[in-house]
Image (cartoon, rainbow, N blue to C red; front, side, top):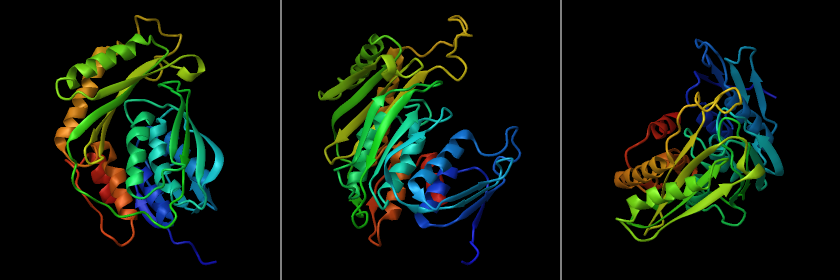
Length: 343
């Protein structure tokens, strides 16, 4: 056994993409100076959780972190997949943060992947699980991922700060390799679908959000249907929250999505706060209208995917064999630019 050669990197930026690409290319990485000048130096809880998740779905993966958390040695293992796996994503980032790398890695496993993820399903920072179900999974199918076995079942919603959500993700393996795509025609919007969710608040919140969103769309096209997903009891997680996920489907099979969620910040959803001390949450009517306006903005920008999906689109294109993929996107998002730089 020869000495392992590590690719040396610095800083905390793009850590998720670095770990994803390191695993896909079987390239060991040594990352130094991770927030070494911050008040709270080192890896954050969600980054450590991601490393633990990578250990679960790979074989012979080696992770070494120094005492302060500012230095990480990561030697990727073989992606094996597995059935009936369980991972607690914690509460510092939502499940959406973990889903993107999981979806890409899962299709290259030795076996199909079936994993239960626990934590926050909807927040204002990461794409919601509803968006992954309606938009990201169809994107994978474009590149030749089989429909059979590709599924995301939302068993319970969980809002920040306490979470309590659960999803069940199934990913099949790709028999040979991903298929390169020529995807440059975004077409015209033919229908809009969506889901309004609420946890531990009145179901009227959903109706108000839907009514406000339809008020924007109905002037533009007739085929608008937004479903209600009201959860109660254990299925509602542990914290109050509400939000809406919207998807525009085009005549050429593109899915353009946006989502928004409203919830209390960390520390506000406790008995120590009375109702007067809590911050005012955005009214549901404003949430619906804002989400609808955001979707129209994404459509106006053009491209076959929305700005949230540009990063994963570029990674999938890079993972295709020698055939060149041609895709059209709108204005590049900061995340997409960072993804291209990481390549």
